[in-house]
Image 1 (spheres, rainbow, N blue to C red):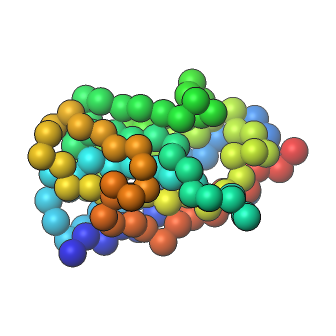
Image 2 (image 1 turned 90 degrees about the horizontal axis):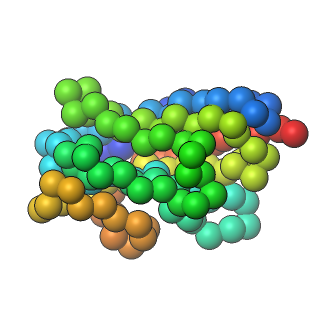
Amino acid sequence: QVQLVESGGGLVQAGGSLRLSCAVSGRTFSNYAMGWFRQASGEEREFVATISRGGDSTHYAGSVKGRFTISRDNAKNTVYLQMNSLKPEDTAVYYCAAELSTYISATYYAPYEYDYWGQGTHVTVSS
């Protein structure tokens, strides 16, 4: 079983930055592609960013491209989401997710593709 624990959420003013972390345990972290998703109140969960198990491939939702950066440290079993130039519409619960990946450069975009999820961390951006 894989356990994921997010941290780093909070309240920030528009234009500010936050760095989310997701610590993974239970299995070999480097075998898993990772993703970040978010869910605003009353909305469906949406894709934010993904990174391959090797860290060589990343993809972003159009709404965050150029502002958010996903990265991973396989030595620390942790994936990060650096969020800059935050906007009120970024307010949501942010979830990290893990998917066992055969291919080192594969990335995944849909929630149903991920088998393991964290409990979420709240991000609130005030205007």
